[in-house]
Amino acid sequence: MRKRSVLSSSPATSHSSVGSETPHPTRSRRDRRPKVKLEQKRFKTGMGFLVLIHEVEGLCSGWTENYLKNAGKKAPRTYRHLGTLLSLLYQYSMCAWGCAKGDHTVEHLTARAITSSMAALALMKRGYYDDALALVRRVGELANLLFLFSNDEAALTQWKGLTQEGRWAQLGFERVRQRLQDKGVPIPMKVPEYREMGARGTHGTATTMPASYSAGGPAIVGPGIPQGIPALIILNHVSEYILWIALALLSLSTPPKAKRAQLIKAIGALNTHEPPRVLRRARYVRTAMPAGAA
Ligand SMILES: [Zn+2]
Image (cartoon, rainbow, N blue to C red):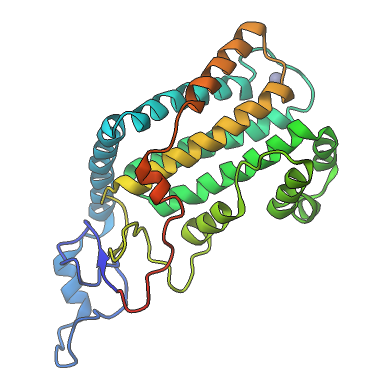
């Protein structure tokens, strides 16, 4: 398996799992050099390693920020309008428009979605694409749940009364998806996305190549190697799920008239987005390498 990392001077085809005890795959049996000595020559350790990671993340973040602002017409516009919608939902979740009293269940769920979205964008900018997708998947689950609540008041009441185990069994992803389907309303996060992001960001599979988003590309260890396609995929998914949550809040919340108008305007602005062609092509990102491709 090929791996890349910017955290060492290793060539692209070499073992690059920093500090790992795994033997170097390309070393011959006659090569008796102590592995530790080899790694000491190539890898920083202690604070040196942590400072290096921070520096590499900063460089990657700068590249991504510039990329997203200049990636055609639609992606920069989506990025900007997502910022507005995130801000409005942030304000709602912290009762900045006035407190509706009550148990704040919807506010708290919205807060979780906003926080996970911002964290996903932060990870994406630093090059942690798989890890960002794990958070995006959480936002998608919250989008499904809130969209169900906005179409089925009884589901919200039921959700509040369930234990943690009960919520998982009765209002987990599959049950929520089924209830949305039975009602004939749109399903914000569908099964293929849920599974793909689970394989990518959460569970992994025996053949999942870490952070590799190009056919035949190497697995990537750690941050710092910016890639345009996963950055756009994550931007697109976050925007889509936040849009559904905002739509759900139009019926789940009672913002002041001016704020409601602002929310509707922001939803309309983000909704004009269409995924760029590159996103449609890479919509369901490749999880496994074809046999023998590595
Ligand atoms: Zn409040």
